Image (cartoon, rainbow, N blue to C red; front, side, top):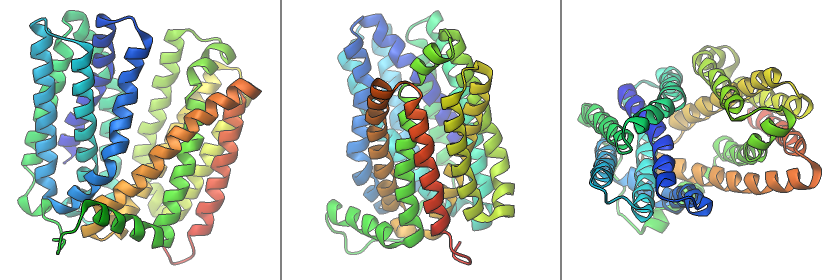
Length: 387
């Protein structure tokens, strides 16, 4: 399970660099190139709910290895077409849309199957190890590897990413068959009705429903400053492109630390203490970023912010895996994801508006206020003995 996630995330990191580079080699139109990211995000939002239904309907082990095998086939085909001189922007759009659908399926299935692979007591450690592998592969190893391979040959990073997705498929195929078997849903109804069951369950669950709302607000708080982060780095910190890359790399180190400290932190503070503390750290780091003009201080604060995000993510994922019935896990994951995606969209719009109206510090201050609100709501959700 760990190896499959690591191989898949390494592919994600390579693709993150390779697809835009391929697009830039075909066109100088910024709108067409930026449209790739918009299509990718839009497709994921459109399919996340029905995918959640099928994660609960189908064998999750089969969904994991087949979705990664399909991603491998898409990229290997793309590499072959580019190597043969038949590459086009339309082809990149089609492939990226397909990758968005398949990644949504793979991510949900991986979250949903984990409680069948490890014991309830091991969920925090398992999620922490998967998070660490994701950070190393997706943030540190994948992007530079993709750039180096592209310098050798344009199709090479796509070929490599396809190979790593194929490896992930083999690792997931090696999972025991019993791991993928869920609770049968009988009788089957329409996709809409089954998806609604997950949303209704989440809404009625005091703790997880409340945390889904907090997650949506936290997504708004996250995207407000990060939508203008590059401008903040240039105008407030005086950084060039290389400096911007450095502070992003340093911030990812905070996430790596978070993946190691979450399990012991949760065992000492409980889920409530860890989640509330992480949100408070997010609030403090955002407010401090609004006030500093030092690049090194900003890098340290961004690192603290990413640490908070990893602790939050691991704790909420483990709680969902513990508390959601197996037969509903895919649909509840999907409902929570929809709330988060909507929050990211609203946050991006709000961040641009605040920066234009009140200056580049405004999105960071607003983010800090929203994170503080999230911490207060989370504190109210965790009543003694209800974790």
